Image 1 (cartoon, rainbow, N blue to C red):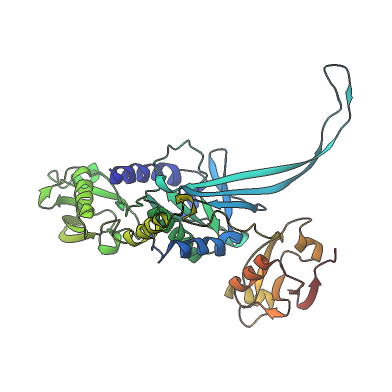
Image 2: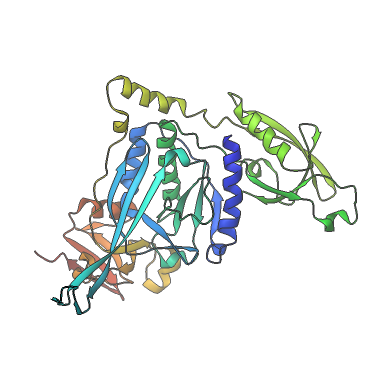
Length: 406
């Protein structure tokens, strides 16, 4: 049953992602989660990454990255993770008008807010993928963790979170998957191929050619990592002819359903060469039992299921910066001999960084006299809310910027 859901979600993914005008440039690949040792570790992982989270937004049937949103609230419970993002959309004045009873209504200045809700429902998840958006140097959060669910293409996604680096997206997925399996869900190792009929152009010189062609291969899926290639033609599965993708998918589902996983023997045609593979498919629940035992033990001790993980995460301190690490490609323009500090990409107007006089293009070298050698140290200062001064590098000069009093 779960592989039917995976197959459905995978098919929609091709239509939804690869054919979208904006997302056609997005590099995406499947990611197999690595379950963490405990649900407490998963919760800590979320707390560590939370200050970096950014939502995505759909505009005119295109998905795109957002900027300027602040994470206002996070709640984690046994059914899923809910996040509330908000940003100030500016002030506007209401128009002059008369009420129905003839009273004049004076114009009012109103602060607009733009909100995005992100909800990750454990029970809906069948697999995970990572998206990498183009022009990553222009945004602080180009890597997105994507839980795949049996959705319809016209359904607004609200379950995608973006972060600053691929390893952070992997860590986020590891945490989400750990919490999902701990509460009874079963994210599966997906069938990592998309199959189609053998095209007529290939049958012209070989009218008896039979099988099913691999139209697309998930780069780090179970088949690709075991030697299968795109454009291979699968001719038989477990010794039986394969005229369409059904027998292959059914064989994979049966192999993965075994307690210790199983193998599928396939014969493929690659060019004019026949090859055989024994593809291994592990049971998707093999690593989840210990996590579920932790949940069961807590319930047995009298803890409610909702208390399995912390009910909330601390609000993220507001600072108003988007940054990324200084890279080797930046050294010449900055006059640096080696990467140091973090490069400021965006400064949000009227936030604390703006009031301190920090500008886009500055390099943050130190916070409170502590040199910044890595992003994680800078994130820790942001989360602490105890920044007093920042040393920046601007056009060949080091400047001290202090937090305004009051």
